[in-house]
Image 1: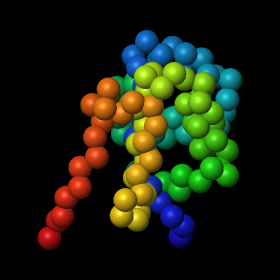
Image 2 (image 1 turned 120 degrees about the vertical axis):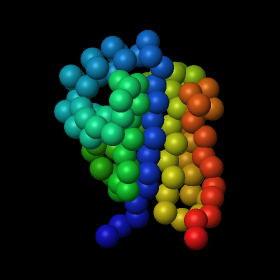
Image 3 (image 1 turned 90 degrees about the horizontal axis):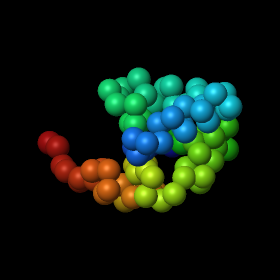
Length: 106
């Protein structure tokens, strides 16, 4: 089964061409971004729902490597894990209108 997360990534519009070039050089990055783009209308947005976001997976490593090459204000990244309070933010999510809201449904 494994631990799962919902992951959201939004990159700055001017970087779309840079990301597209990086995808051509890395099959794992292309595979992961292709999966994440299916649910999003904009070329700047990526979303992976209920995914095993493990650092040991080559596709996750490729995305993390891409993010490490970008400037912090070039993107917003949020990973929400299964457990309460397990939220990882990278880049500047609020600059890209990305926020986490907690709610109770019943």
